Length: 625
Image 1: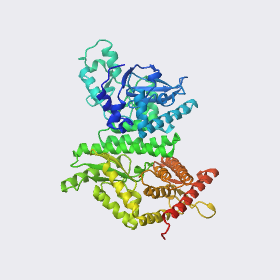
Image 2: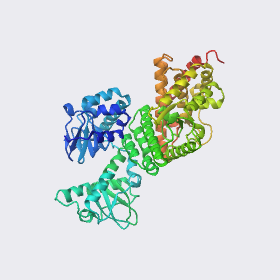
Image 3: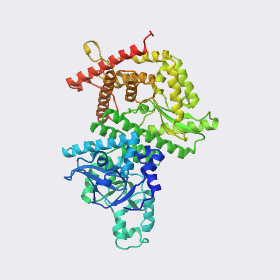
Image 4: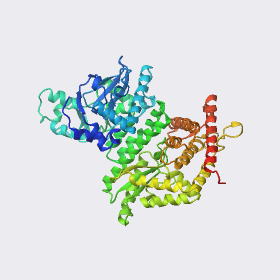
C-alpha cells in the first residue's frame, strides 16, 4: 500500500461519476480509510476479505476475466472493479488482471456499503454496472462478439485524440516528462518543422532512461522511437486494431498526406470505442476544453444508445443513463460558457423540461430548457444572460441535442425569468384554459434543475414546484381542462382492433410510437402526478407515487407501466434500426415488421392505454362536461 494524498483523491472523485453525484460530506465519509495500490502489468488482484470491495482506477487499465481466462470486460481510468465482490460475493469467481502498470484507489468496505445504502443514485449506478458485467459475462461464455461489427468499420478520425502534445528533438527528457505529466498523457509526438519524426512514451522513459540510469538532461532525439508506425485519419478502426496488435504498440500516431501529425490513437481509445460505456463518455465530456472538442466526443452518442439497446437494458434504465449523460454534458457546456463570459452577475439555475426532465430521452431528442434568475437583471446583466444562453443552446446543438423547433430554450428571452416570474407564468397557465396555456403545462410541468450556480442547490426550483402544486390543488377546473386535452388523442386502434396507420406522407402505413403511444401515457402520468402531494418528474415515478397516495389502483398502474415499457422498447429498437440505415432517428414502426404475436401484444398495449384513459376520465372529469 502506498501513502495517499486525500485532497488529491477527493479532487479526482469529485469529477468522476457516480462519486460526483455525492454531497461533499458523503464524499469525505467515503474517503475515510481509502488506500492506494500500485499494480504491475500482468498482476492478478485477489479480492477477498476486506479487499473484497470496490476499487477505482486512477490511472491504467485492467481486464475482468472468468476463472478460465475468458474476457468479460476491459476498463480504464475512472472505472471501478470489485463491484460483484462487494454486492454479491462474486458468485462467478471473476478475476481482475492489470493490462498495464496501474494506480488504483481501494475504498474501505464498510464505508462503501454505508454510502451505497444512503444514496439511491449511487446504488443504482453500481447495480447497473453489475448487471452490465453479467451481460458481458453471458456474451463471453457464449462466444458472442462483444461489440457490434459496425464499430470496426468506423474511421479512426472519429475516435482519435486531436489535442496533441508535441516536442522537438532538441528538448530534454525532463522537459517533456513534465509536459506529459501536466497533460496527463502517456506519450508525446516529436516533430521537426511540421512533420512527425518520432514518439516518446512512458515505456520509453522507463526502459531507456530510468532503467539504464540515464540523465534527465538527455535529449529527446536520443530516446525517441524514430519514424514511428502511423496511419491516415480515414483508416478503419479494424485496421488500427490489427496494426497495433501485430506491432505490439499501444500508441499510434495519425498523420495526413504530408506526414503532419493530426491525431493520436491509443489502446485506451480503442477500448472506449469497442465497449463504449456511459461512464467513459461522461469522463471524456468533463475532460474537453472547448465546444468543438465536446462535439467530437459526442459523436459517440448514437453508438452509445445503440449499444444500450443491443445489451437489452430496460427502456427505463436507458432513459436514466442518457439523462445522466445529458445532464453532465449540459453542465460541462455551462462551465465552458462561464469560462468564456466570466462569472455570472447573480445566481442562476439552468432548468430542463420535457424528456430530459422526465429522464426518458432517446435518439433525436431536442432541447427544452430555461433559466431561473435570482432577481430582475439590468440591461447589462440581461445581455450577459442572453449571451450565456445562446452559447449553451448552440453548444448543446453542436453536441447532438438539437434546437427546439418551438423555441422552448433559454436563448428565448421569454424563458429567462426570475423565481417570481416563473411562478407567475405557472399561475397564469393554471388559471387559463387557452390551448397555449395547456401546451405550456404539458412541457413546463415536467421540470428539473441540472445546474445551480448558487449555494442553495435547487431550492428555488423546489419552491417553484411547491407553488405550482398548491395552485393546481386549488383549481380543479384546470385539471379537468388538462384532462380533456390529454384524452382528446386516442391510441391508434380502430374497429375490430385494427391498427390506425398514417394515411399519407413519408411514414404512410406506419405507427407513430411517440405521439400515438408514449405521449398518451406521459399525459396520463402527468395528470396523476399533478394530483399527488409529492412531485415526481418521471412518468414511471409519477405512476408509482400515485399508487402510494392511493390515487390509482395497483393493477391499473402496473398495466400502464408495462404499456409504457413495451412502447418505449419498441421505439428504441425502431430508432436504432432507422439510425443505422439512414443516420436519422425515427419513432415510426411498420406493424408488418412485427411477428403476429408481437402485433397482438401491441394491440393489447394500446387497449390498456384506452382503458386507463377511461379511468382518468371518471376521476378527473367527474362533474365537468
